[in-house]
Length: 302
Ligand SMILES: [Zn+2]
Ligand SMILES: [Zn+2]
Image (cartoon, rainbow, N blue to C red; front, top):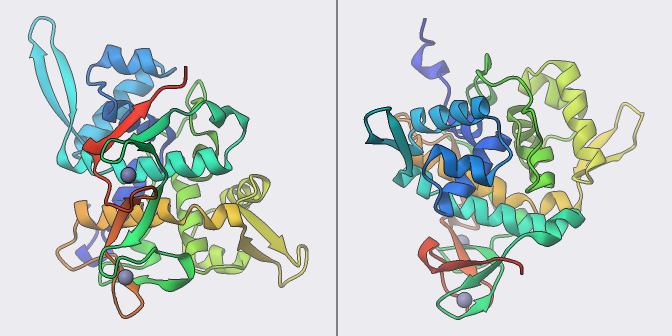
C-alpha cells in the first residue's frame, strides 16, 4: 500500500537512499571517468558481479543512469550518466577534496585535479552564487521546507542491499565510514541540523538504538564527532574540525536531492545565506571562477 502523500519519502530520503551507499558512490565516480559497460566497472572496482548488477539497476531505477542496449545477442547494455547522474559531480569533487585533506595515508594516492581554464591544480570552494561569498557552516541556515521533517527524510527501510559488500572499496575510506551507509548519512545530517544529545537523535530519527549507538561510535572513532561530558546525562556529540569540513558534501547532497527529486509540495529543506536564499556553486580556489565538470582534468599520480 502506498503511504499517504504527506507521509511519502521526500527528496532527501531518495537522495540519501541512493548516494548513502559506498558502491553507488564508487560507480558514479567511475562513470564520471568514462566507464559505461559492466566490464569497465568491474575492471575499475573490486566489486562482485552480483553487487555491481544490483547497483547498476538501482542507479538506473533512480534515474542516474540511462540504460542503452548496444548488443542484442546476447543482450548487453551500457549505463550512461543522465543529467541527474551527471549533476552529482560537485558532490564527488567535494568528497575528493575532503578525503585528501582529512583522510588517512591511503588517500595520499588520490589523483590530482587540474582546472583547465587556469591550468592549475586546485581545491573546490563552496560559494553562494547569490552574493559570491564563501559559504561557511555558521552562516547558513537550513530549515525543513514544506516536504521536510525527519519521518519523511529517512532513507527507505527494507533495503534491497542490506548485506555488506564482499570486499571493502579502497577509495574514499573515510567518506565511506561516515557517509557510505544510509543510517550514517542520516546521523551525519542530524548533527549538521544541530542535534547534539543521544536522546535527541533517538526521538527524532526513530532509528534502532543499537544502530544509532554503533553509528555514533564510528563517527567518534573516525574523529568526525567528539563527545563532551561523556558518560553524564548531558553528554553531547559535537562536530570536530574534520567533521565540520564535511559540510560542503552534506549541503551539496541535500541540494542535489531537492533539485532532482523535487516534490510537488515544495522543497524538503530550505537554505538561507544571510538575508537571501543560498545558491550553491563551486569555485576554483586558484582563479576564483566557477568550476564546470568539463573544465576539470584528472591528473593520475605517476
Ligand atoms: Zn550568499
Ligand atoms: Zn582555476
